[in-house]
Length: 305
View 1 (cartoon, rainbow, N blue to C red):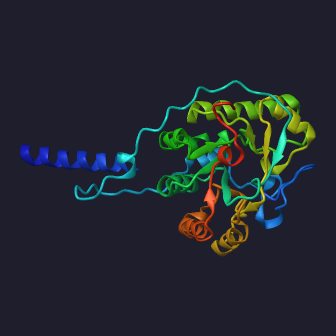
View 2: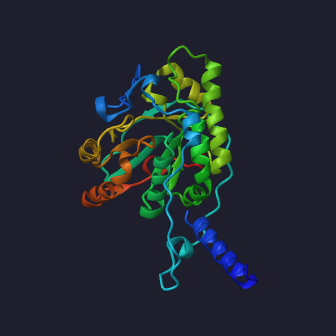
View 3: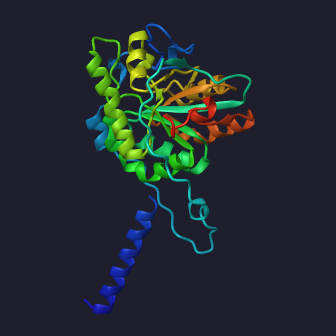
């Protein structure tokens, strides 16, 4: 082959590679429970979960690419100021736990809280939505799905640093905490997830803890309170997507529950939401709602923990 032709082909291939790299549950609580139940919340019981860590690790998020255009305006990431550095991770501050499920009134604030994350495509979609919309979101991922979440750490860390994204603790395994588990097992499940969150996202999840399936009791609350999780997070609105539902069902629940003061529960488990982000965003804007993180809504701080 002609040497000049070979060099030209290699240059084109390298340029294409660089472009490709640049784009890349109704609660079953035994004591305190959210007012939202039935199809609007978690589906109780571990048997209702269709995802598993092995399946999640093999999945892949949606591939999206854009071509560079010199005439295009700079992207937000290119013009944004450098976010403040993350605060040092504070030690645990044990204390009496308090159950939280709605914003203090009066307010127009809402908190979008997204759990689990065993579907790679849905996690990728939520990360892209957070980047594009700049809407604050609190994610409560399970470390058992670390293969799905860790691939987005480089994108999420700047959003965590800026305060747009918050990370809560939802345990490593998502196993029910009140069904024949020892105290040591519960502590290990929570602490393992916290360590993964610190390593992956550079932040503590304390003091926020969301029990799997919303299932908790006074004993469980006391155990996690001893670990510094003094805010037990439930919800008063839900997308109802802990299991697979239709777009019409999801938007019906969004229309019902996206109201001032709502702590909205969602799951990064099923792809239904991927075609509905624009509708959800429009609903929030039309109702003049103010999405915020849990820290902003309740006056907590990851610098304090």
